[in-house]
Length: 471
Image (cartoon, rainbow, N blue to C red):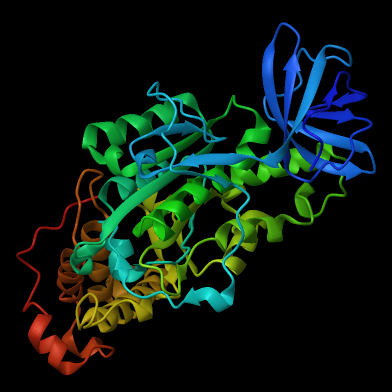
């Protein structure tokens, strides 16, 4: 690390949010630099490039007002560290981990470098058991498993913010949680002020804030801070999970804003761009965040991630969702057509999946009939899409009685099962029970993916008397 006793009295170059300092010996990558700007207070930066004794520092607060002669730089000899204790739950921080709730500094039990490492595969324990989100379509059909990373693919104008807040309020360990502790770390990147206030007010009014640690980077905050936000949030989550034995759900929104900040900083550094201007290391950078989720061998706690990203022009092949899908274990896709019809949350069932779901549901975890039920709903809903296309060609009146039953099943599934009020929490048992009620709209002979004993035990006789709310 650099010699912290040496003050560098001048800068040699300023370019955007980057400042160049000459004559620095033994500077280290990611080392924190404190910069006193005459008449403008202290700013913080980190070393992003070292070329001999020439060091480039990324200034978190930006370089506005700085000149080559009015700044004094002090190299601290350490990376950015986060003050940690269990008291971070119920607190609100900025993107760099500094308290912004007016409650003063955190009484730290320890400090940790925010630049954590992905979990070594050898140290991982295979994820088991589930986290109950209270959203029936997610819990029933794409179950979130402890230690999993399950992103939500959304688009501009879709209610991913409301869904993120609802999951943070409602999430729990379910009926198998026992005495285990559960908490949420919520990271928002590049959000507008009114959105940040919506999150904060939502958690405060519901009483959920006491088990939530919030990290907020607003749209007007420095872009450099945006890159720190998920790292600070994950550092807090790792401390709570592996040192405080808690099961932590990390919700990060919006990862597209994070990637755009990375692209802007990469361009400022003059790096060669890759697809759509993003840096060539976007994949490895995202992986360094996502792979910090998991369960460690011998650890009582776990870190589970729900990254939320908006797809520009609803393009699922865009680099951010495309690369995210390679790294994570499934995805939840929101559908604009369902949203336009008034369905909330507009979860598109067929392109959504949880690759770890099969290992955390069933008789030992949720209910014995859950796997068969989910398989049958996916299969039947795929038939619904084919039937709807056929009806557009030949007309609904020309369909067979079975095909008409599938159309009714599709309406019931979307209206009763997927559609759910923003203030309603459904348990895992509710999700499974309502799933059976939707299948009752189909002839029994069509339910060929469910064991006969489950049909006998769980399938209602009919559904005609059950109300069907309109979207």
